[in-house]
Length: 576
Image (cartoon, rainbow, N blue to C red; front, side, top):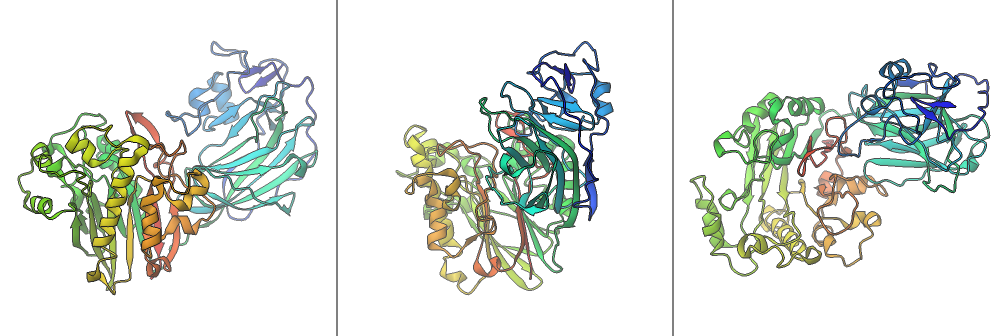
């Protein structure tokens, strides 16, 4: 019997081929070595190597069966079934997956069994990456003699595959991408029977990047076995931030950074300092709940939004501006801009009719008037539910107008929820919600980039949580061409000159910004968060990415709340 890294591998092969003699892998050895796994501590012995109370003789009980997409973050070290000393001796504590994996003398076997069961290997996070960087990962891989599957290699959480070589020859890429995994299928036919050298160049990796190896198929009719050795990761270059550029960081921070309240926002502050943006746009920028709970806190206990000016000072931003939001109608989700440069509020956008705008303008007492207010709302009343704003940032004399927004999130309309108090009124297929969002975006655009009073101003950005889907991503969603889920972004793409920065900079790639879908448009984690740019600003884009990293990794906490948020940030550098 062969030890399955702590579990007896009853379904393995009876004999194990001797590893061939190979020259040291020199490919990719330029740049800083970030990670190396040569598996030199792995050996082959007869019978189990460790006997302990929690040892299990069952290949269905792997060391780790929890991946970073699960609700609870675990690693092999926190979920294994073998002896702790064994794990330490092999250095596998920080690995995420060692599933149906066996150790061999100086290398690993993955999915080598006669039962058609696929194995999975997933590396630790590349925590030595301090900034967004390009990396090169090299590894050696050998198909089992009976292998009939292909091999799937993935870059997980952050990073885009840009170039691949197999045995020194360029290899055509495959780009299935579900938003947090960028995959490469290495065909069985492309591999020699012996050891093969693979090198993969990855753009925009972070400290949260991980690497995955497994069979490409889960079919039990295939043999998925292969062997892995000499994994090395080098940092080839850090993402260059052009001199004099404007760095903008946008993020929906979920209930006023609910996740970090108990730490006095120390982790949040450290994250902002790490990436050192010039302008931040925070969505859901008000404290709502008591620390790590679902109970609403009193207004006097809310650190945000009143605390934004002081908090922004702590990461070097002198200027703060809050957008329009409708607290008189129980809205707790404003957007806030903080900046190194002076910020001027040009417009707060809330109501879509004059009577209610007058009420909004006169609101001063800090108390909700929701019930009284909604009694006066006419059929189909449709405000900008979470408000919006036009904020102007003066970047050394260059004026940049920033539209902040957070569109309605529900399947039903605002009118159904707050006026009729009947969410079934127009919720079928999200009909009411889609109409609500499209009407909001039309109104926001009419008051900002389309308003004649702003004619001649060419530097525009619009960003926020749109809570709906774009036609630019429909190759992924596969919604009907006339789907109402596409209508809000259709209006932007067809009636304004805004350009979707992430969508256009990464054609054919998809980056989920939300960990779960809250609409009826499909089960894929969606891209709900966008940063749009006018042509003049789009031409200035030097770097752009959905910023997945260690701290922004979504880990379920309770209810619908995640650590550190249920959304991912967007980071863009503009070269002036």
